[in-house]
Length: 565
Image (cartoon, rainbow, N blue to C red; front, top):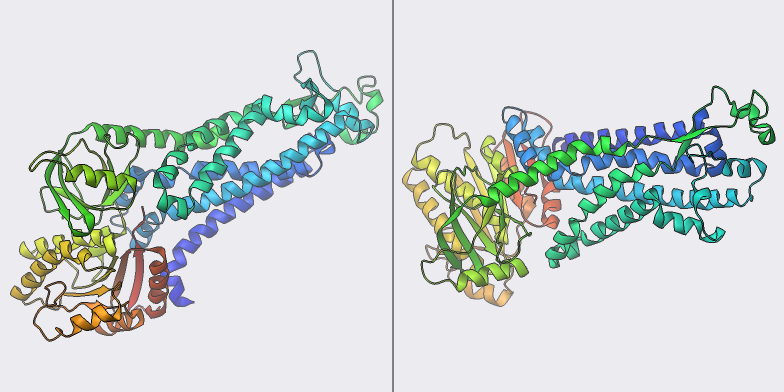
């Protein structure tokens, strides 16, 4: 339990605070609509469905305020910069932005379902009240109106239609009903298209449908202007407890004037206007960056259909492990895709390595392959750079870097930066040991990165720092037959697959063995564990970080960090 607290304690507290606020809002508004005298007559028509409709609405307002903030990447970068001198624990929370975005989305989906079901029941009960099904008081309340149609209680009384069709007509003709239908349909499409199987296989579908959030927020802002949930406005003159049994005397005796009702002021826009403005500013900044000229320094097609783009942009400054969004208008005007930069801050350009992983990347690689030698590529929009967990790699005295496949890209930036720091004898470098693990299925994936590792090997030897970098390459996609053929050459000075002095391992790492070794070699150290790879591997490494961490500050502790886009 103590080990778990080291890696997950603060995030758990943050989620607990969020859940506490949600619970407080739900209970507060539920009790308000369930007990307030202003809603006595409204409750008589709608029963407990009134409170069950309004309490989720309050929770929805709160979460719709939050949902855009985790995807305002410039805002997150600004906050990350303000925490440079603060605890790494605070900065780590910013790397969980997409996880929190999903968590808030699940809450919105749940509360929308409850809110919608409650209002469907409300429509049915309002219609039955108008038909006189529920007794004299319900009928009297449903018949109330004045010349301006401003003090009525039952909104269905203004609908001209067959009695059984009134709820349906109201849902598709009133402001509240129509916007509610639009909001719900938009949310269903957004959530279903965000499933991992769709997002991974049909990213364009996910990308375009996700922009229905604009329709969702527009509908959300106007939804409350229907003012269908109404409260009594003259409770001081008309005591419902006394007058509820005397509907025939309303307006005839001074103790029971005709009850007056009014719809509540729309509140949602007050919750969401701030985040909406921030998000609009984000998109304006993206457009400004899109308009800035980007020059191609070099275009390289590596084995395994990996495209390397070396780019230059005026005023562009980066840190290790950061990423950018790229847009190629000749392929798609609207699609922006994130790529981790593989260059170092010390270089006069920035680079990305792009693997073939979908229609957009396939078209980009095909376009670059058809270019004449030395030609500039198509117009490229660049948004960023944006911060990630890997920025903090040099804040740890010991770091474990784990990359899977193309997930090695942020560590390419780190490795290059280390080479420059040693070359320039940077006194600010506090890192004294790096363990690097790279997992690949095929040998071709090693080729573009092996040159960098060879340079680092040579540099470390020349400076008598051979122990600074320990790296292990794991080939996970070979069968036993291929492995046996290569093991014959194990005694040679360099590895037959990579050409490096470090031999390639075959199969998957034994993480218990690796973590135990790091712990023994680095007693009383804080070890940053960084992953850029699949979620399944992340779960394994999280458990290992917890297992091999010690709450004793004099012993080794592992802190897990994962790249998220």
